[in-house]
Image (tube, rainbow, N blue to C red; front, side, top):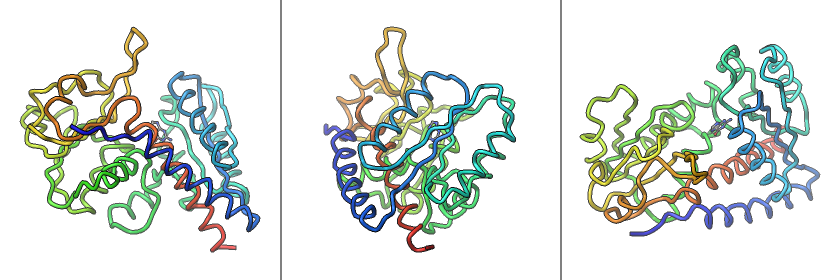
Amino acid sequence: MQILDGKTLSKKIKQKISNDVQKLKQQNITPGLAVIIVGDDEASHIYVNMKEKACKESGIYSIVHKMPIDIDQEKIIETINMMNNNQNIDGILVQLPLPKHINTQKVLQSISPQKDVDGFHPFNVGKLVLDLDTFAPCTPLGVIRLLDEYKIDLKGLNVCIVGASNIVGKPMMNLLLNRFATVDICHIHTKDLKSHTKRADLLIVGVGKANLIDKDMVKDNAIVVDIGTNRLKSGKLVGDVKFDEVSKKCSFITPVPGGVGPMTIAMLLENTLKAAQQRINRC
Ligand code: GUN
């Protein structure tokens, strides 16, 4: 069994991004990322702090707009419009989830597709489906990059994705389909989950439920990617997969922490750098 080490790969990618940012700065372009966070969800604030820190370390300018939980939707959209028109901002990210009174789709659709570094705007979702150049969502993009690093050939692989969210499962499905994998996508209404997971050469799980996947649900020598991050009452961070028992029967597995999480942040930096490079072409 081999560990898919996202921590080490993300460091390598971040080093390259730092170098590329320095080159852009020599052309008087500093990549800029604006992050909007609404409310005081602890996990969301931790993620945003990590994104801010990563920007700083790689020389990317970042600004965080913190908004109260009862903010009007129109106020969020106003801020996004300001960022859409701000020449120093290349990427805009709205941390999800948003409070219930906000229409998430309306907010995401107000982001200029050229600055949509999360790849959540329908324009970019459509481009991903058509396998056109776009901003792909950071977590599934990070998974692909991690599998590529270990030279795992996706063509013809039987993949099972557990979790069909707009952020992870659906874009993951499209990225894999674009690489000619055969994709099975499961969700809360899937009957007999085990019958699907057990057939997979590559099992990708991202639902946020600790211990969902045990050894009996995994094929011998499967590749297992765990996108879940769950904080147990003890304070320990675990994935959706029972790592101790599943790791004994698979060929590759991502740890939690240190697997997909750091790759997500590296891909956000990469998408922001890409948006800044595209800014030069528009100037
Ligand atoms: N919430 C959980 N994951 C993500 C992500 O990748 N992007 C944003 N904007 N919010 C999230």
